[in-house]
Image (cartoon, rainbow, N blue to C red; front, top):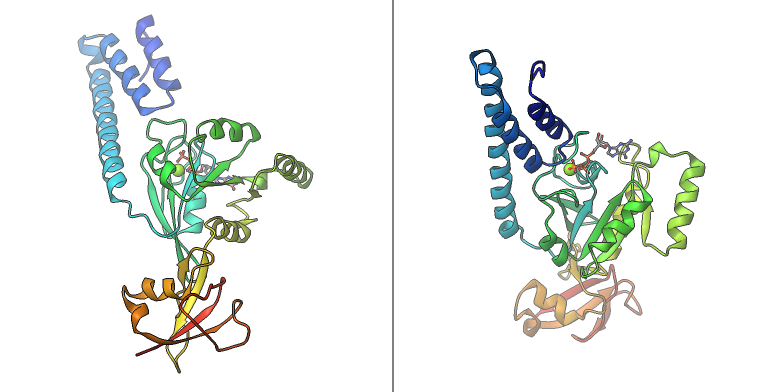
Length: 303
Ligand SMILES: Nc1nc2c(ncn2[C@@H]2O[C@H](COP(=O)(O)OP(=O)(O)OP(=O)(O)O)[C@@H](O)[C@H]2O)c(=O)[nH]1
Ligand SMILES: [Mg+2]
């Protein structure tokens, strides 16, 4: 798009296009450029070019609107669901790709992610659903999913982003965890200062880098802890305990474990034994109202 011999109106529109932050702004600027583009033979190619760009952008926006919608309906909420939010380019997709099985596009240009992306994070036998939401300052940001999630992972790379994001979350009930990323770009001293500042503000926070993987294991622990859940393994007499735990609220009882396995199952249970933190001794016999602790193993003998 050479701008030689173009009218000031065209050049102004082109300036808008180059500075546009969103596709919507780009489309607006392109409309103006097409309008202001000279309509004589020598600029035929240029006009055709502009129109192609315009058409492609329109299609892209329509597509992301559609997939955005189908995603809203299509996301099945798991027992533990966290959303990953933040300004553009803070590294949300990079983090999603190392925590989960998702393969989002990671790229330096802003606003790469235009619809929610779902990933699954395995954590000690449990599945945690993590959803990347398009950047908080973009039109595709989805408040609906953020308001129903159990945990909000707030990814930032600058301190001032935290208050700006929190202003948007005043009515959001989920637990909040501040993830300060790209700390590979900070010196040890800067890191210490940042941690001290976040500490003094009493944030639940963690410093990470997706480049060096610093803080990632601790982040996984913190994500699991944020759900306030306990993991219970089950077993049949004479067999190994289950590979995958059942995930329940703290203080859940034996009855709730049985019912989670199979509705009406608690009526069929003849005897229950437990191993682990809530037992007085290994293999203690307990009743249906016994309260469980994280990492307990429950053995059911049926009638
Ligand atoms: N130095 C450094 N760069 C990072 C880190 N994490 C991500 N990046 C880079 O930051 C840029 C943006 O990363 P993305 O993961 O696409 O960011 P995003 O928040 O998903 O961005 P949008 O979806 O476009 O809003 C990429 O160039 C990444 O390589 C990090 O921990 N350290
Ligand atoms: Mg992204």
